[in-house]
Image (cartoon, rainbow, N blue to C red; front, side, top):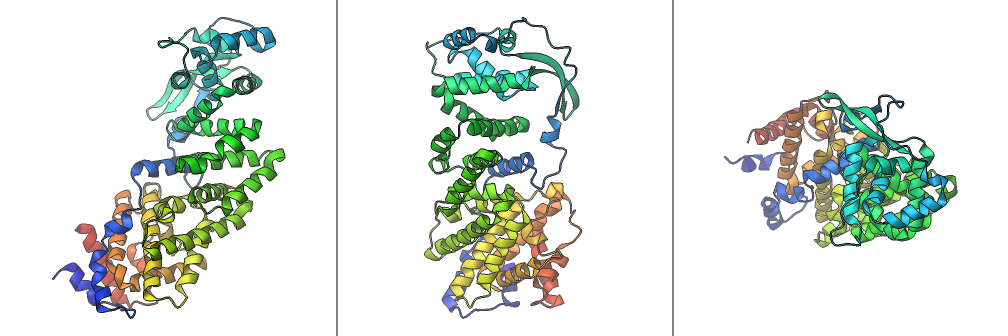
Length: 476
């Protein structure tokens, strides 16, 4: 007997559906639920973002591997000893006129942005920035004399060490001798070269979502620093990129910039007004950006609560209309924007629980179940099982908190929905398989979860049968 045929008679409700509607069950394969789950590259962006911002990831990974130490500030590499260029305004103006959009300018911008980083990284970053310049000649060549250029602005090359996956490794490190020289360099070029601003921001944005992870974090920090120095530019030239780009990477960068601005007393109120304006928007990327902010700005939980409720409402409306609109298309990003902050998922679960308790029509109940299963698919994708994390919608069922009862009710609603019974089994098998591949570290097994989630409506025999069906799919 076919596995699916065998399972059709256990604890099912027809919910008043017609025979024709029941037959549609076979039209709901796992792929329909998984189609909103993104590829690994996007998952990796979220994981990197969480590591950088210390959201629930405690590992000895890239963030620690890339740690850099200068061995001895007295033993810098030899280079031309020249007076700091900021000591003579005439020299500074002449240097700027001579080197505008030339390689030395790219080099000193890269050095100021990535101060205390390996020399090789700084030069590579300078190369990329230089490529974005509008060169005055068709074949303009790079001007070397790197040590001299650094020295003119108060930077030198030091001997250092970097922690790699093979151990400590000697590296040359670029470092400004005084922090003020680094800030003066960035401020001066930003002020005097307005035509380069967009290019510099694009260059930093590109680094902010790629490895090395320490460069990614620094790039975000520098963008925030520039926004604090020039809030008008941020508001008029950067904030609108959320809707223009419609990219989760841009959402993350703008969110981090808003957070940086919020830490400055003179702009804290501006940041609050901007966040609330984003939170009132119906366009999805503004909402996602605001949710990323709220995940770290705990004082703004009231804004997050209303946005979560609105997102669920809009996603259900799209399901009801039978269209894959922007809310459903970005459901993976919505779930990820919570950054594993308990409050976010508590509000999410309670919002769906309150709907599930209502006297819903069968179609409305199916839509709610589909939304829950789509979120669970995203949950499985985003969990770092290899680092001891569990899927949030599983873990919250196993903790000593009132939320477990609301979440269990949702799991019961999903299992009782015959329309999605097979998808429930398939997704649970996918979850168990991925968790098993990473090694079980959660301290509880499938039987315990099924008992906790479905124990109120299923006998021990039925619970055992559910676990068997899930395991058959794992083997199959």
